Image (cartoon, rainbow, N blue to C red; front, side, top):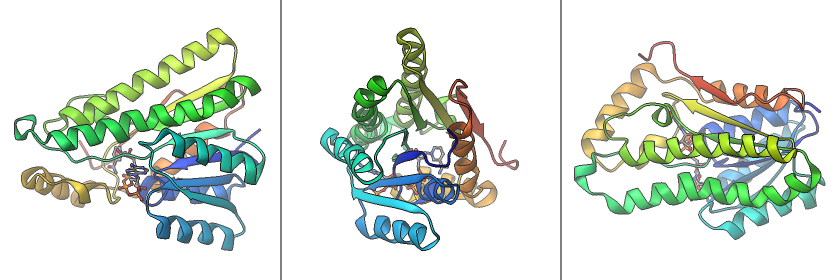
Length: 247
Ligand SMILES: NC(=O)c1ccc[n+]([C@@H]2O[C@H](COP(=O)([O-])OP(=O)(O)OC[C@H]3O[C@@H](n4cnc5c(N)ncnc54)[C@H](OP(=O)(O)O)[C@@H]3O)[C@@H](O)[C@H]2O)c1
């Protein structure tokens, strides 16, 4: 079973990487179920997909609420009859030095970037285990592979999901449930991600970097499509995606 005819739940689908991935997968015949908080965006993106001959549904979802993730997965089954893949992509990146003590932002990153992924995993695991088939894909970051100044907590959440995806893959092999996992480590991708940085210096630095080297989010959509498109006995574990201009 390739991308075509798969039912894929995508969080953080209202902009950037999630939106680009939803559109690409739908254009290749997947049924996509979009989750995020901004309803207007979700509605517009779903309509665009449907207008282009694709299959899409959406539900307003806050990934910090486990019940929202369960309802999003329930919608996929109700509307398209199955759940094959979840792409845990929702994330926030309000970077700052630890000394700035932006503790509310630390907690928000843990809630969205780590607990939000766990909520997605918990929402699909009963179906994936019972059907002995499924795929869990998560957007980490290059800040989940190496340390960057200003990314102490952001990087901690992204290192954490790397471990989570690998352990799920290993446990699935042990339990013979055929659950595939993949982790994506993007570098600078031009999206709305930088808009929520409140630390002036961090924002200036990031804006400068992204302006000079950033690439479009379809680069990530293509690797997610590739991971899903593999034969069911092939797990592509990881993708690191850099702009050629970024050192
Ligand atoms: N852009 C990059 O350079 C880059 C690099 C490495 C990793 N990443 C990761 O890529 C992922 C996607 O980010 P992006 O770059 O595409 O930025 P983006 O355009 O800001 O997209 C972030 C998405 O996450 C959603 N989101 C945020 N909080 C949420 C919540 N509580 N519940 C549900 N959805 C939530 C947003 O939707 P709503 O606001 O509508 O809820 C939005 O759809 C993130 O995990 C980010 O950490 C990005």
